[in-house]
Image (cartoon, rainbow, N blue to C red; front, side, top):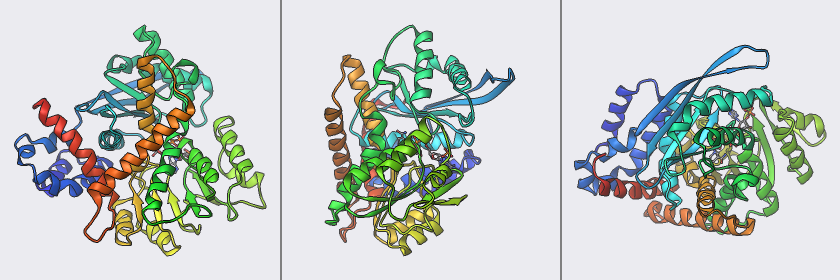
Length: 447
Ligand code: NDP
């Protein structure tokens, strides 16, 4: 296969899907050599079957707002690949959601899930509905309308959704509740559920904690201690807040967080009390990050409309908001400010130009599909607990999460170490994730 030819063909067939093409291009260009060492893959046209999702469901979601007005959104579920396990991937509720974004996420998810070594295929779903500014009742009515359409396509051994941007414990609870009513069964069809009804301890924390564990593994390859290191985080949602929590525990200094309206800079570092305030602000009052600067005017500076990468001096960046949030200029600013490591909590937060900069500078750079895999890995652990109808302790789950992140790191080192010793985590993650799925697809024939 010639990666460029496959990519050109996909561009021609899916001309309005830039995020999907971007994700495919990153993977294909890094696995090309490995793929071509296996002529049997080409005979089965494996690459095209791996790039194009197994199926896509798209549907209208009609619901009634508090003013009695009928509202319509689009809903989607992309079932990308189930060669190594049931389809698995989050649901995103955000006004920007479209088929291209969900296709990129489902494609990435397939490799990420493979890397975890657990039996999970790749999927993603969502809607252009935004929970921001909606009442609890509106969110509940929307979730029920969404599941009224989707419930037939999902199930504990078929397709297991979870949270993502705009979908946290509240939304998963409403969706799972309605799924249970429609399917008339109590099974582990969603992960990220409440603890009272099958959720796993450490699942809310897992993506952020897992990213920190991955970062520790990366730093260890260069003998760097995390204590006292200044870390810039973007976002202030699930991934960002638990990343910050673990970093404080590890003795790092968290100097920024953000939301889609702007970012805060905290030169002396976010304190535990400030982080508690952010948790409450985001999860209870559903407020804005600017309010942190109002609460702590002496300590916090707010930059409206800006991402944290330019005005913050940091050793480490952990983007944890959304895709393409670090562009080439941002990457150059981070490097100029002395950044030595980037570990991605978000999916595809760095543009191709930014990734080129990081790799050229030979800093430690972990792509999301490796660094943020702790979330889905712990979802896999939630599925295992659900099917056995038992619950593990927080210590047990955390220990397994640490082990999984260490395994992922090891696979990246194995497949990504270059002749000069530099670990190319992009290549390592892509090749390792790809080979397992490819072998399973080969064994199962053309489907
Ligand atoms: P949340 O909805 O909890 O938080 C998202 C955060 O990112 C919010 O602060 C939000 O700000 C900000 N944000 C969202 N969109 C944009 C945008 N277009 N520009 C700037 N800021 C934005 O989501 P999560 O924390 O769950 O997800 C964050 C990232 O991590 C996503 O890329 C997701 O795919 C990825 N991820 C999540 C996992 C999980 O377990 N939850 C697992 C693996 C990856 P605002 O409130 O203003 O919208």
